[in-house]
Image (cartoon, rainbow, N blue to C red; front, side, top):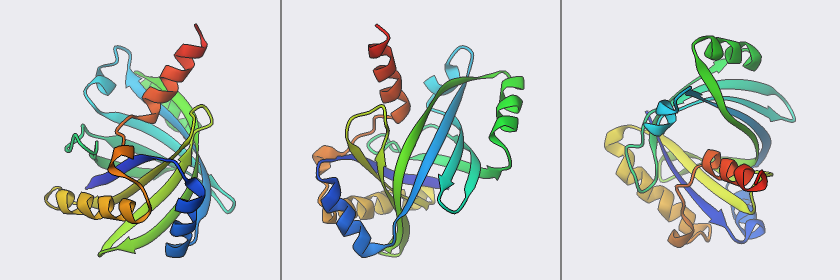
Length: 188
């Protein structure tokens, strides 16, 4: 399956939050993400991602191992995604490091997640803040087959417009790149 996803900067978070609350009940979560790469950086350079994500909400904690293939849609950055729940992040870290993967970067994301349906698609819209980055982002995603990606992205674009998000606010910048750039600028 492909994670059809659009990401944008949000200039009026409170207004977007209210519109999302009209669609679904929010679930607040904290994501602790650790990304891995080969020692020479070729894994990430080829557009692939390997991540261990621990999701903490008020009710539970769970950990996911995610592998993303290179983007199949450059305009949105949508990628085929393979994900499975794992029992323990520390054990998975030891396994990946034993397989010669290195920690590339880790950071936290604070998310307000809203799950609902739009035009027959199950979507997850998330208002996201990353403590190390300025501003608020929105991610809206759905899982689709490659044949349905174009139509799904059109539906997601239209939903963003209804939420007050302009096409000019869309971004494909990765949090990993933005956090790394911020850290590098502070270490100089």
